[in-house]
Length: 438
Image (tube, rainbow, N blue to C red; front, side, top):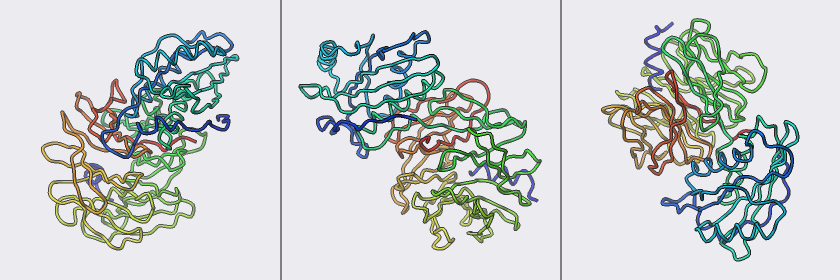
């Protein structure tokens, strides 16, 4: 078995009810071009939700508006117009007056939220209006149900629905981020909302747990752990009462897991044959295929969204660089050159591969899958590394020590300053952004 130092070197590289929606507002769609640069933001008013029934002793009406507003701001597509108080329900005159005032203040759209509380249950209706039209026409209406404990998730789902109405693709607020937390010698896996709220441990084994990665169905995490004294690969189900599964426990290194887009296979780095190479495991059958055969170190596989190619990191030409191969191991080609590149991650849109470059520190870079247009994404202070894509292909989570202790940050690819996701004691590293939750 390779010594622990060798592993360190490898790892261092490394339920709503929905009525038919009203027609989408043609007058405001022009503001939200999510594929182009320099997107003009849409101004949206989100007053406190109106209470239809029950007693709101926990301030849920304010929470829903606040969380949904922050989600839309984070999306980079909206500017939320400040609003206090609520618009009364079932009062057409009050609604018309409120929308006229918001439109005069520059709002392009408005959200009228209606909340009904029944014990520990809540029901929310989101009504979205186009304030650029003279009649302030209804764009969409949708109902969401849950418990009081799920109020934040309901707000996330409302925000994602609003993004969907204006872009044709849901937002990423109803997602999770998994990461590693802890001092040296005791690193556990944690899962939190995309914005860092509700953080909870996934492992409690007192060992070193590394490199979590979400399955495409957002039900499980593959990761490397020393829980049995060796670097083996496991699978854990954060939201289900299922036992820990062993995925790979071969002699030597078992590391750098990466799920295929269909969730049936897992690419990984194994040194069972004497050298770190890329393999693919059929999760259902346990069948193993070796993809690389080289004297250098091959690690950090990442699948293209089509499932036809795999990018990986190799030092076969000297320093570590990013390579791409077909999923049968053929047609290997080098994408990056110069410097020291690691931790390749393929965009869910398929158009970009992000990686970490070491050059007077660590920063995130991106390159097109054909090797063209390498460009730097982050610029200090401190380092930025271990990136993970959000499912929209517009946001990245990454670890950075720019404020001292390593924490998880998130950013848009357009140069917007990053947002801190985690805080508190311990080093937070190795984020993995989940797919949209079922």
